[in-house]
Amino acid sequence: MSESPQIGHVVVVDDCEINLKNRYLATVLGFLLPGAGHYYQGRRNKAFLFAVCILGLFVLGLLIGQGRVVYASWNPDEYRIQFPAQLCVGIPAFPAAIQGWIHRNDAKENMLGRGITEDFDKWSWTKFMAPPSGREELSHWHKSASAGFELGSLFTAVAGLLNLLAIFDAYAGPMPLPTSDERRKK
Image 1: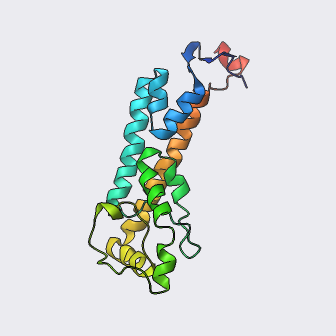
Image 2: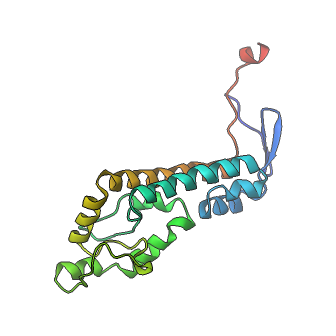
Image 3: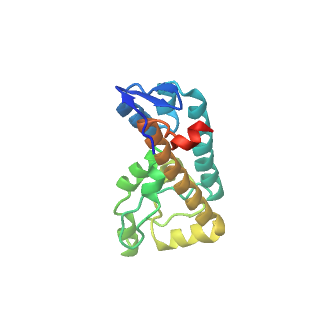
C-alpha cells in the first residue's frame, strides 16, 4: 500500500498536489460549519457538496422531528445519547448546548412538582432546542411526532457523524487509492 508523501501541508494524491494550507485551522472551520474547512483549502466543490448534504440532512431531521429532536440533556433519567453526534454538525447545534446548560435543572424540579407547567404545543424562541421540562413533555413530543421523533434524531445524528468524516478529510486530505506495481503496469 502506498502512502501519500507530505511536504509541509501539500499532499500528493494520484499525481495531483493539494495544498491543505493550515490543516488545524481547516479542521476547526470544518467543525464550526460543514464544508468551511474545504472552502478555506480551496476545494470548493467538496465544500459545497459537504455543506449541502450535511446541513440538508440536519435540517431535514429537524423538520421530520418537528424541531424537537436536537437538545442536550445530561439528566440521568433522560440522557440524550444522540446529542454528542448531533453536536459534530457545529454551529447549527450550539443553541442546544446552550439551552441544555440553561435548563440543566428543570427536569429535576419538574419531577418534584416545582416545575413550570406550560402548554406543550406552545412554541417560543426560549424553547428552541431546549430539553423537555419533564417526562410528560417528552412523552408528548414522542406522541405528536410519532416515528418522526426517532427518524429526526437519527438523521441529525448521522449528519453530525458525516461532518466528523468531513473534518478528518479537511485535516488529512484525500486518501490515495492503494496501488500495486502490477496494477500500475496495466
